[in-house]
Structures are given as structure tokens and as C-alpha cells.
Length: 148
Image (spheres, helix red, strand yellow):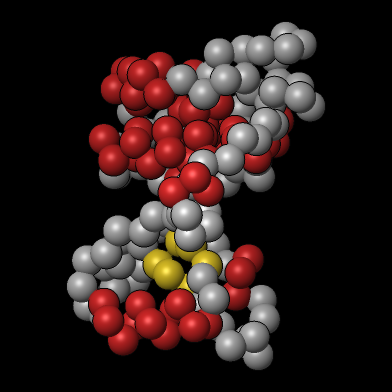
């Protein structure tokens, strides 16, 4: 991050602990040691795009899930999309915009089942366009119902 990185691929031989909880403002993924060494050997200092495929056969490419198993990748994708339009914002400011612009669902306000609601990409974009990189209470968010 300090050297201008736009993302990070993390891998370990298993002897290092504690690195997974490190705080950074750039997106990061974790891969196996074998995959990390392969990526390093073949793509060091090159731009790469990371994707995921489940299984070896085309019919195993997609799976059906509900709940946070599906909400998490959708919210992460919307966060990446919105952040690409406002790269000057921090991850906490993007999180705040997503929470502030979500469509409420379930019990009024933030709740256990839906959090702040259903993520709305256009609303988050419009929120940041209008308010800029606003950060709730001037502090880092801990997530959950403490974001706004």
C-alpha cells in the first residue's frame, strides 16, 4: 500500500500468523501458498485480474446460496464499483455511503437480519456525488449497526 499498490494477494506457508487481520485501505485476497508462488513466478510486477471458478466442469461454475453467502459478494462488488468512481474516499467512507444509501428491509432501521438494508449502487453513487467522502463521526467504522 505504501508503495502505490492498488491491491494485494496474500499467501503464507502457514508459519506466519496475525497478518490476516491487518488493516489496509486497498483490496486484498488470500490464496494458497502454491497459488501464491505460481502467481509470483508468472505475474510479478504485472497487472492481473482475479476471478473465481468453482469446480473443473462448466456445470459447476455457479452455485445457489442465500443469506450472507450471497449478500457479501454483492455488497463487495457494489463497494468496488462505487469506489472506482470515488478513489479519493477511504474504505470507511465507502462503507458509510453504502449504509446510508441502502434500501431499508425488515425491521425499521439497522437490524440483525438485513443490517442497513439492501445495497443500492446508484444511490450510493448519488450519495457520494452529493455529499463527498463523508465519514460518520470522524472515526473508523467497526461494521454492523455502528457504521452510521
